[in-house]
Length: 338
Image (cartoon, rainbow, N blue to C red; front, side):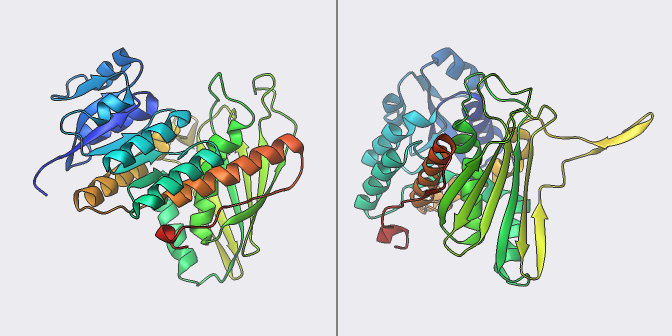
């Protein structure tokens, strides 16, 4: 346990650069050994001042770089499948940012590849499981004091969407977090989805269906609704309330510091997810590094990543077709408790 874990980071964009900073300055027990990004200038900028890091344009080169013992994938979703399979071929432990793979078929191929290994190598980056508020909500639901959960009410708001954001991405990029959080909080699979289209906001880019209201059904009979609004303009907000037989519990109301100025007072609202979930990301990466150094894999599994992709794919179909769509999941391999 004395040696630092050498990590290859794939992707040096907004998320990747933040993870490079986290590994170098926040999380003990690890070092950035290699970085890969097609934009090598961006990668060089992300590792400026960090000694002993090799920079590569291709993921395969970074995986094969000297000193690499584990992989953190923060590249765009379409690149994940190839990177995961390459890491599996080398026996490298992986922390893969969501989505595992954007499409359910690709996610299933990764699932089957890991199952053939007979051991877990990958953890999926659903960081809400490491957020203090979500963890407390999970504890309250699990101890049974409120009775069975009947409904989850969720809110997911962003200041604005990127220029290339599509209506489908409100579900398969944004709501994918709620999909995993609901499965984890309730301990149930999601079995069907309906996507409703309220009147679009005047601040949404032309052609973008924003906001949306997404309704999930679970195998245990609970309902999960999600308001997703990615051009709300005022801040980044995430809330989740569980309504149970004998009470309710909610997380997400604490937005930050109360600021008082002449003539008024107000609570600061985070502007993006890296601010709102900074502590969750720190705990997630620290837990991954610690487990990896001990030869273990914990946290959200490839099965969780596959299930989220399958549910999101059904949600996009429900949005496109305007119908209720049932979720079809492959049989769960024994490696994941099937």
